[in-house]
Length: 423
Ligand code: AMP
Ligand code: GLY
Image (cartoon, rainbow, N blue to C red; front, side, top):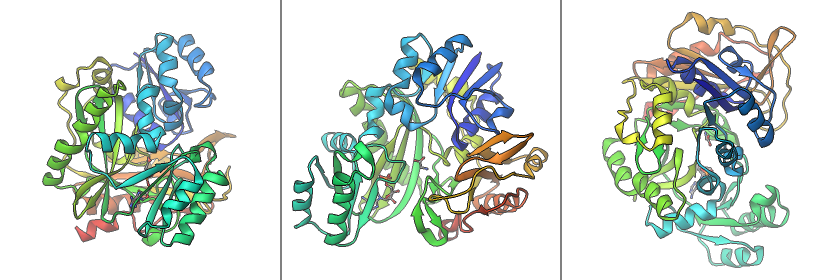
């Protein structure tokens, strides 16, 4: 089987690693890919939003299966485009990817189907949003409706801050058209957990839980990023919590999408907050998390192609999804300055060390191959991942492995998995 993966980050590298392990696969392509993915796949420099070029490439290479890893092309309808050309594709169609593409849609869906989430109001004009803030409780959370690289969420402590936030999102359009509509919601407190799941339209099977670290600096200080590190499983995601979510959140979401005529096939990522009143949905994503995939996929025992084909064919109920009874930690190595300004093109050494150690992975997030060597090509550069028999061992292993790789301006958080000690 020939497989095409669309995307260029650590998540797509983790997907490519699993696809390469499948006995069913003879050839992998990736658009655009990166220097790490190129070890498994033939990469072609086609951007993830260049739908016509991706379609032409898939047809030219006669790919049997396409896997879309990233949010933008999913929300933009790449799955529909590829399917219209007869290409079997893994990921939600555009009408289902709206679950991530519009926060206002997802909040209305949760309200309509009684799925636990923060109380909220949607607004499509700034005056009404500003008027609403006059009587609101603080802190309060503002969210741009559309995709904003994970940066469209503002937590505001005072009315002044919130009003400024409304202006930033709706009038100054800091996040572009993503801010045409916005959600204003209740501030919740609790631990955050990410749960990824495979969905075939009717059946949902969840993967091992994970936790991300979104802020740039130790102690959850600094700006929001795409994610600076993850661990899996979350020790706070207990059996009781899982049972609650199975009952009130996971299947309910899949059934709600079906009832709306938006049958969902692909991966749903549940961003949950474990509040005092029980688990509530913070957000949905319609793809593997990055860097959640880096700690979840290496622990999956199944052949990923079997699971993906079952999602497409509607036979996921026949899959016994299994994860290793161990743990994994991923520490992101970034270029200092991320998520603002940072240098690119710095040479990376030490990558070969990972080939010598079982249970250690170096997933490339932003790299390219240039002049015979691998160089940095993004803010998040590498996701150094290690397994261990438990979370503490995995964390120690991952941090030890961060020392194997060197590049100028290498930056990482030193407290990934700090919560493990509080469990
Ligand atoms: P989201 O992209 O919706 O997951 O939001 C990004 C981050 O903002 C989340 O991971 C939370 O840390 C925080 N956040 C979002 N919504 C809320 C909320 N209602 N209450 C408290 N924190 C929130
Ligand atoms: N790590 C969070 C995300 O993938 O959106």
